[in-house]
Length: 294
Image (cartoon, rainbow, N blue to C red; front, side, top):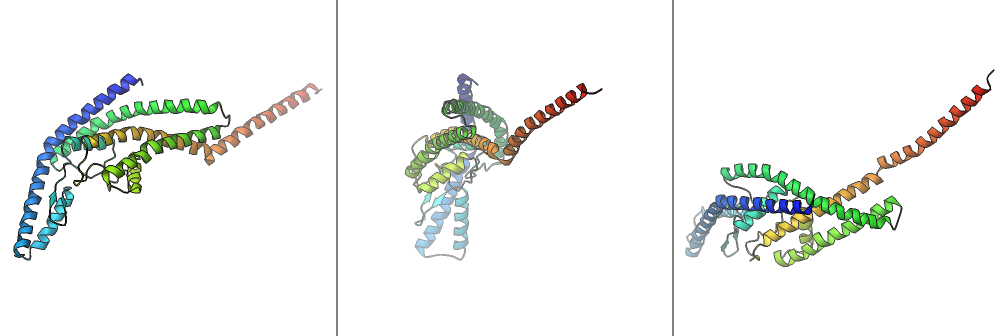
């Protein structure tokens, strides 16, 4: 696939993400604002009762319900009963949501809450996932072409296939680890204020498309993120997935060549020529015996 075609697919894919982001923002943002106002009013009511020392027996169950509702909606309530509402369904957050849907990572940190948005999400994914697959295949092919060039250079230095493949895997794996895991983890430590091992864990879980959702970049309501931060994170995901796919493909290929089935094939290939040579000798001896028959 030509670079022009890949760039065109990327542009179409980004446009599709923006269209989806605008749709989900229009459907989900008003409800998100209503939930925020609802939690603020109920927490304010509880805090007033605490200040007036007029607590009723229903306050604790009510407070428990509010906390659970807020946790489900991504709304943070601190120890002083200050409410901080998240902005998951603004344009940037909706863009990030659409991206995680089409890459099938699916963190699960936010999800459509209206039936209309859920139906649209289904059709949006049906069209968008194949579009992503085509674009992803093109990007992956370019990564594979780079790997083939690297392998051709290694081939000139060693003729042993297993050694050449091992060196290739180590080089590609090291490059992937440094560029898409170690360095991004440092950035996540600074921006998300996570420990380094958590940042590395998040990067790995994301790029392997496991996507547990226990840690998600750009969703902490207490952090004032740089504009388009989640968009930048998504492009890291996009190219990181292509690189991770290349690494997994190389590791799988190395495992197949080093596995027991590969060894049995090599033994079989060694045995078959010997058997063929013996059969040729037997046929030749038979012809010789026929020449001496009376």
